[in-house]
Image (cartoon, rainbow, N blue to C red; front, side):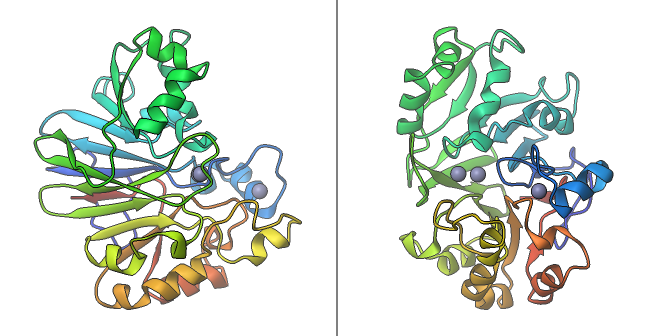
Length: 303
Ligand SMILES: [Zn+2]
Ligand SMILES: [Zn+2]
Ligand SMILES: [Zn+2]
């Protein structure tokens, strides 16, 4: 495991609850299929250091011997390997929590089906709308009918639910392009610290909660850092309104006071175009100079 920039890191099998960044890229990962941009070319040349999988957290309760994934991404096979243990992490895998129905966040569920792992009643926590979507649409419906997964529509905003004696989560609604179902973020509560996870959001001003207040109430926040600035998409001929995300520059303005008061903020869900991917870039220096962090693959946080 690599050291979390600005976070306390230990081995995955340390005491208490460990949160591992098993993926830190936007849905397409880095390098992105078919892309020849400088960041993707660099990731192909230096896979070990520059490639990133779609955003995913591993939650590990080492005392209970149980591990969970937050989101089932297209990189799930490798993310299970990174989770470690016999069977590449499967032995301890006690369930999956989903945020929403975009390809980078749930399509890894296919690996639980009879063509691959053929799991039995693997718990999958999600919102009631997400559970309906999975139950009613192939190929996901087959996972439900064959009993590969056991849908638990318990990710109901404001109602905490426990995964183990020392690990609880509370879901909250997040404004996002909800073509198929809805979107939630999670507040993850360990024995001593709380972590806020919002990998995908359209705009902070659409969120009823206000990011500064939320971030001030937790010890760590891992937030949507898809784009550094709005220019990033325009320069590639894409309309930023098609895929809205708050640019990192704006998020830093909103959260600067919270960070100066001690909040730890990490950016994840990084798009392949994002200049903060390059260590030594002006933009990366700006992020770190203001006290924020770009999350690394494999970063570990203890709650
Ligand atoms: Zn996403
Ligand atoms: Zn690219
Ligand atoms: Zn999304």
